[in-house]
Image 1 (spheres, each protein chain N blue to C red):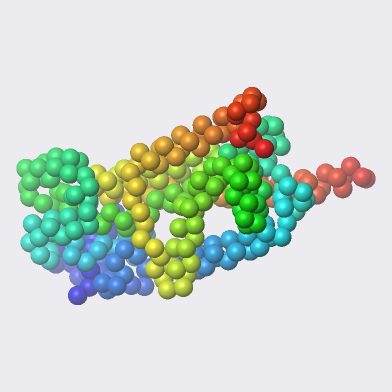
Image 2 (cartoon, rainbow over the protein chains, first blue to last red; image 1 turned 30 degrees about the vertical axis):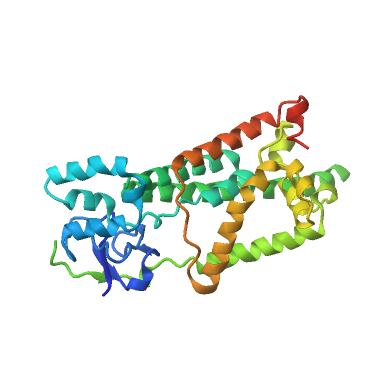
Length: 180
Length: 145
């Protein structure tokens, strides 16, 4: 039974084997990188298939965030029921398990220490946003913050690398020039 | 929309195995170089550009010297050179183990979902450490050696 899910960006219906749950996948249509939802949460976007919606809710509580954040989760659930059933919250969460979206915190810390402090700090802020959005169940936003965190980590790393190269070059070149 | 055929995307899985292997190799290589050479008296390592340009300490200053001391088992010396690095080290170690496992069998350690508050606390600690270690008076000067 493959995992079926919709692309968080373009809603294209995608499927992969169960064993790839939690891995990152690129949408072949729009190129967005996202996490493959866990089996049993086979729902995303406007599509509806698999078990009846209430079963989907039971499945998600198995991943612990209903238990962790009861206060945050109650209002959106009530709102989505008023707005016509479960489709609203499903498209918002995309059926993700909370641990699927990487926050790149370690990379951000390493960049802050070794490479480029300003960009590294931006990456840490995005990492914090990922965790905050995961806690409230806003997976689409968490994925966007995750992508931003990755971008800023790379920016910090490359900036630090470039600075270091210029620096080492100056170290080698300046004494050589002063001898001439 | 519901009758659209689901597209199999196994070919489009993002593999982090090569990157993870690269991270592990680079870390091992770095550890070997750091074990053999003390950055405190070796010209192999460049000085911190931030320190050279401004004369101030950055939050990372002393990390390489601290790692050298740590590799030689001197935890106290390591802590005095850069306490922030020693505090962050368990997190980095968890990530490195995860990278190693991912390089070996394609699946790393499960990620730990901490509250966003703690990440902001860490950010505050980093900035506070950056400011305090540049205060040129007694208790704070201990942070910049």
